[in-house]
Structures are given as C-alpha cells and as structure tokens.
Length: 114
Image (cartoon, rainbow, N blue to C red; front, side, top):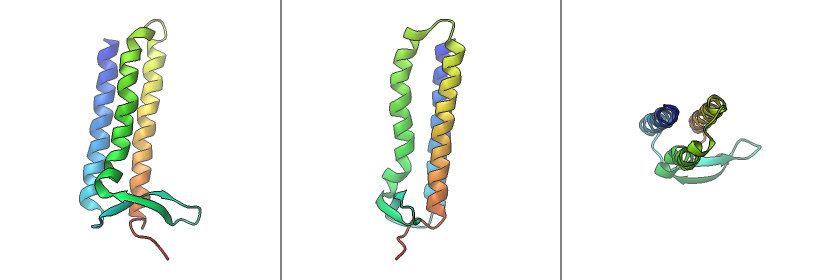
C-alpha cells in the first residue's frame, strides 16, 4: 500500500514535470539553446541545447526518486507517513524549481544581453 502510494507520487510528479517541459517547448520562442544559469546581473551565464534544458529537471527528479524507491522498503515502520510526507516535499520542490526555471527563461533569458 505504502509503496504503491510512493510510486503513484513519483508517477504524478513525472507527469507534471514532463507536461511542463512539453508546454514550455511549444510556447517558448524558437532558440537552439536555452539558459541554465543566471548571474547576479540577471544575464544568462551558460546555455545548453533546448532538449537538454527542458529534460534536465525531470531527469534529475527521476534519478533521485527511483533509488529512494528501492530504499523505502528497508525503512518501513512507524515513520512511513513521515517518509511519504518528506517525499511529497521533495517532489513539490522539483516541480517548483522547474516552474521557476521556465519562468526565468520566459522572462527574457533565452538570448544573452550585452
């Protein structure tokens, strides 16, 4: 039951992250590269190909969530609800970070300012 809830959370989070990436890919202005990091002055410091930029956060989430799935059964006990709560917090953090990254790109970050 708990493992099913965990995998449901992972699946739901991946659907949201991939959906955000697909929507961003369609709605962002055409560009071969998208920024991944910005300096204190608000200018992008480095960029990667569009596909890598939009798949980075979902991939990182999957690489984080799947190993935890194999460790979760080892930790079953009275703290299962707390573990699911913590994993919900982690998933929400990844979704929030992805939304923020896309917002920064939309905010005029897809081309370097001189």
